[in-house]
Length: 112
Ligand code: AMP
Image (cartoon, rainbow, N blue to C red; front, side, top):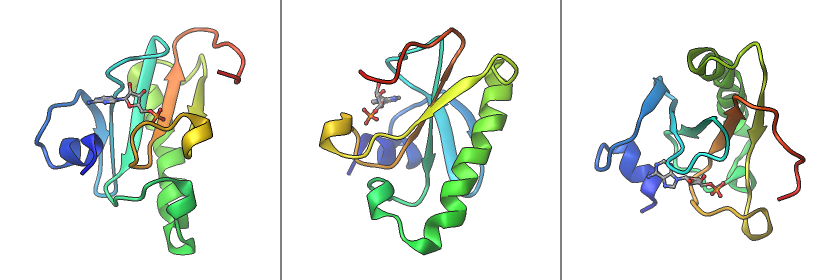
């Protein structure tokens, strides 16, 4: 079981900023930007590669929820970056799909 599943199950705490019946959004424990929130589906998809066509609405919902997360975190006007890491070369560490929402400062280039 992944650490994010434990957060979904309420087994470990998280600073939740948004939730609905399909997704949960909480602050990243090691923020890479002044605002750094992770949006995860309640459905335990490993990454984008594991998604099926039937998950298209869920994936779209995650992206649209980022606007409400950004609004609540105070970066809707200033802007924010969305990132999904998929697999080894992307540096994915937690194998439960998550959308990074980062902002609150001028962010650097994409290459890590
Ligand atoms: P990734 O490299 O895309 O898999 O990102 C995983 C992210 O999860 C990292 O930014 C971690 O800091 C974050 N993370 C790991 N454990 C927790 C946790 N318990 N609560 C919040 N964020 C976490």
